[in-house]
Amino acid sequence: MPREYYPVFFDLEGRSVLVIGGGQLALEKVQGLLAAAAQVTVVASALTEELAALRDAGRIEHLAREYRPGDMQGRALVMAAGDDRDANEALQADARAIGVPLNAADDPAHCDFILPAVVRQSPVTLAISTGGGSPAMARRIREELTEYLDTETSSLAELVAEVRAELRDRDEFRSIPAEAWQTAMDSRLRILLAQRRRGEAKALLLKRLNAASATPDV
Image (cartoon, rainbow, N blue to C red; front, top):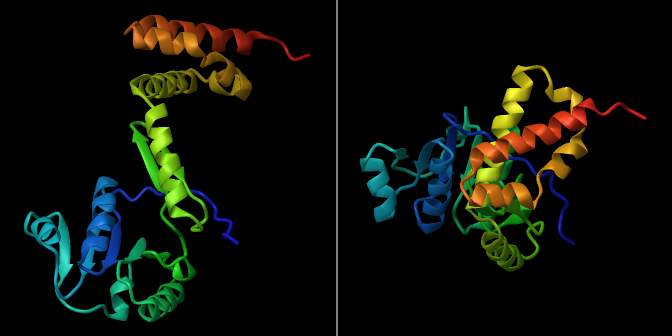
């Protein structure tokens, strides 16, 4: 039975993350962490060519040795990127002893968190998980959602964020019911954005939200 996980998006910008291992799995973890602007330290006796290139470019720190328990101190997260489950069990014990969340690649039993399949169409990010029970299914859903998200989705998300910030600045945000946002974001807005009529789309969105705000409670 898959576990029930609490979904969350973690802000890692400028925060220290430890990756244990220097192979292909470690490279995949490092690439995702760098995309999130984390400060990455890799501890491994040897690195793949790609990881070595990242080290030489100054994008990651490399501890050229085997893992030591003190390496986890001060980290926001730890990624174990090996295939030794006995080692993962020991790493999980070390991480829990100091309260650092740990992910062990392809080893849910020794994870404090798992990594979902991700779809990105900035600023929209979708994460899909099957609780570790079927990664292949998560990848399949990711492929389908990738086809669904398009540039209009991204443009709409940016527009809504802009309008939301303006309403907050004018102290008008709280007066708008949550359901009014859902109603306001219809196909007409997407069509205007697809036609590059962003000013009209913004005006329409503000008009709809202002009307919802002005409607008295009944």
